[in-house]
Length: 303
Image (cartoon, rainbow, N blue to C red; front, side, top):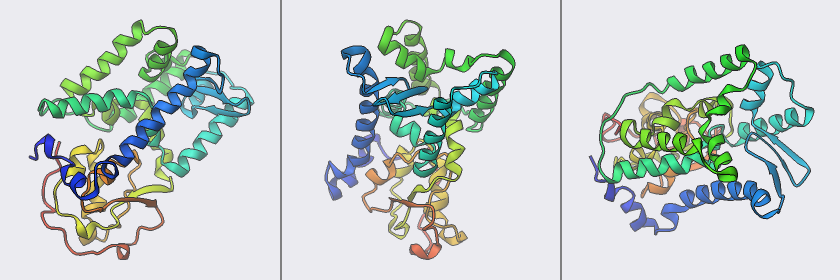
């Protein structure tokens, strides 16, 4: 297995440091900018955005609502106001365009916590860990919806780590520290990418519009792949890469169509051969890339 220190080194050498970290820097800028916009009002009295990720109003004009929260509210027997419903529609349309789980990598502030745990896990060489089915998140999603239906409340929001993080930054962490620490330690010691990749019902929900989303990562130059495996090492959803990268012999197109792809761009950053790029789901013909068989296509995905 490749040493952690060597992952992405070839990309830095061939492309330079900045191009080899472009999408990481853009993701962090997006996450932090969104978080700062929410905090400007409570902290400094500059109300660009009022509310939180569950429901907000931007510049007193644009309503944005988390469709997952709105759905829970409706199941709990509470009909949201028309502005909340409109906000949910706006958000759904956005993620139908940009990729549902782009929320996880470009918006969710908890991603910084889990990415830090993943980085530290690789840095200190922690291997193995608990094997949790990635389908577990969909069972937990169903449980949260059933809890709302039978309890008459949005019970998930009482422990949602993202909500806890927002409340903590505004009012002091309190119990939120325990929730965030639990997620961090779980990802660090128990399961690699355990929370976001296996358990989080929010990510499970946003993967549903990802089934039809337009913007996708594509292994458009997969014939260049030299099997360095860097993309597999850094990808939080490693299972989504192989069909597009190694599917030429099975007449599978180069576009990553899995709804669980987070459109994070990690694979683009670390690839020295420039195999990956952003595109649309409509350019998925096997003729759009060289269909030579890949060397080493039977290598196991790094876990």
